[in-house]
Structures are given as C-alpha cells and as structure tokens.
Length: 446
Image 1 (cartoon, rainbow, N blue to C red):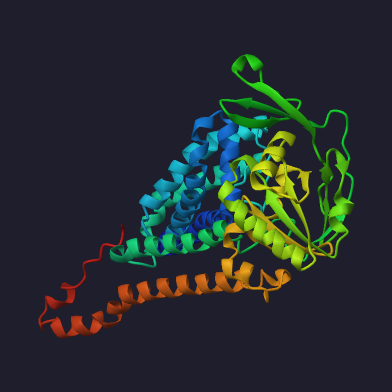
Image 2: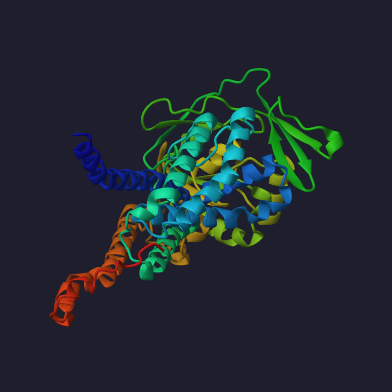
C-alpha cells in the first residue's frame, strides 16, 4: 500500500510544482509590473523620489542623473516583471531581480531603521507603504526570486527562446509610450490629491512651535531638514532660511483639498479662490526655469486676462529669487508662496499650468505642452485648453497595442506547433524504429 502511495505522490509532484511556479511568477512578476507601471506613469514623481534618495545619501553630485533614473528604473522593473510573468529568460530574469534586491534590501533596511526618507516611493503615489512594510516586501520578493531561479526552468514559458527579445523590446516601447506623455504633458493616471474636479478650500494649517523646515546649502545644492536632522555646519552646510512646515494637508472630504498659500507671510488662499476663473502658474523650482519660457508665459497671461481670468503664480522660492524672476521676465502677476511638495503634487512640470473654474480644478498641463496655435487663436477658450488631453483613451490605446504586439509575437512563435504533428507524420518512415525518432525534447530554457 505504501508503494502505491509513493507512486501517487510521484505522479502528482510535477503538477504541484507547476502550480507553485506559475503562482510565484504571477506574484513576483506582478509586483514588478505594478511597481514599474506606476513609476512610468509619473516620471516627474519618480525623478523627485530618486533625487530625494540621492540627497539623503549625500550623493549631491549625482542629482543630475535623477531624470535618467526616472525613465530607466520603471523600464527595468517592467521588463523584469513581464519576463517573469510569461516565463521568459527563466534564469536571467530571476537573477536580475536578485541583483536589484541586493541593492534595495540594504537601503530599505536602513530606511526602516532610520526613517531618513519617510516614503520609499516603490509604488509611487498609487500605494504608499511604511518603510518596514517595504523591507518585508523586498524580503518576500527575494525568496520568490530564489525559488524561481531554482525551479522556474522546470516549467515552460509562454514564448520560445527565439522571440523573447521581442517581448523585451515591446515592453520597453510600451514603457516609453507611457512615460513620455507623463513627462511632457501630465501623467495619464493621476494618483495625487489634486485630481481634475477637486475643489480647493482655504484652511489654515496647524503648526506647532517646533514644526519648522530648515534650509541649508552645500556645493550649490539646497536641502531641507527637520529640526531633528539639521546638519553640522562643520561639514560644509550653510544655513539659508527656515519656514513653517504645514501639517494639515489631507483632504477634508472626498473631492476636496485644503490649499495654503501666503503673500509676504499673510494667508492668501481666499484671495486666490475668490475669482470665477483662475490661471495658476506653478514654479516648483523657480531658479531652474528657463528665461526662454517667459514669452509663452506672458502670452498665456495676456490671453487669460482677455478672457477675464485672474492669474497667480505659486512658488516655494525665496523673496530674492522671486524679485529676480519678476525683473527678468517682466512678470506683472502676483507671486504667492506655497509648500514645495504641494506645488509638485498639484501638477507636474517646471513650469506647469493649472486652470480653476471657481475653486475647482478644470485642467492642468506642462507649459511646454500648450500649442502656439491655441495661444494665438482668439476663438480658443482658455477654460477648454485641456480638452485635447484624453489620458484615459491614450492609455487604453497603448495597452491594446502592447497586447496585440505580444499576441502577434506568440502567433509567430507558436503557430508551427499546430502543424508539427502533420509534418512529423509525413516524415516518419514505417518500421519498428520509427516510434522514437521524434522523441527528443525542445530546448526552451533560455
């Protein structure tokens, strides 16, 4: 009886292993696909997070590479994730995951123990995890990758080795198709609190005596520190200024967001939200705004005023920087001060433009995505300058194109299997030795 039981277990073992491998592919690969997707959707947000990591680690000299990382990181994650899900590169893909985890595990453990960066940003703004949850997630991904490295090649993949590079190429093209509009216009999915249709309300933030952000400068780079992490000036840091840290920035209710802006230290949110129509110019990093944009900005301001819309600029710059900008650009619009993180969340771009109808966000886009034709055409209503943006439809087209590309690759790669029995039957010669002539397995490992 024990012999029969052993035979039964032996026969069932491959099925159990196959199911576990397939589930592990879906879990590990799915996490990487989701992580890469939300980063690709919002390359500005990814760039901000990479910059935050570099500054926290003291690698100020590498900040210039943050934008490259904002495009490269999601591409790598999506390629690895898709490869694992479909069983492509069954040895190389798990090794790629393990190499990433070799870097991310120490970093996330350091973040979990020090909280140097409160939000790891591994899932962008779509899903914010605690640092300890992020570390635990990476431990599980490492274990899953080790399992796939050991057993993944025992289960065939969807695509054969000859076309796996096509899957990688299609995934890279799809990633860029998602990321480039997110950088040059706006993310196709807005995971941030200032979505279209959000109502802005004036709420005074609650600030305690110790809630200050201290701004220091070193080697031409400025960083903000909390009271608990102020750097030592002996290390080359120079104190520049301090500002109050806003705490009450959570939505008051569904579809409503508190906004805090000041004009020379005086609350100006009511002034901003009072007009029927408002054009907001956002300068998250005013010193980095090219003077070449001033011509377009001034034309946009003139068009807004011709159509009876009020114009305000929001920035986190210092008084000296705002004065210099006003002098160079001949700006005649009010410049209000807002929290740097709020400006970046409201719209991506430097500069970016947001249009409010009353207190409601109607459209937003980068300044560079506004066409000259819409500026010069008097029949174009400024309240409708966002109508040409259809991110949902654009994303559906990209997803459909990517799915069709994978289907075409699959058809090209696997159609011959349907006709193999026919050709094998014709080629087989009669005789006692013909039963084993085609029994050799195909190589589908890599």
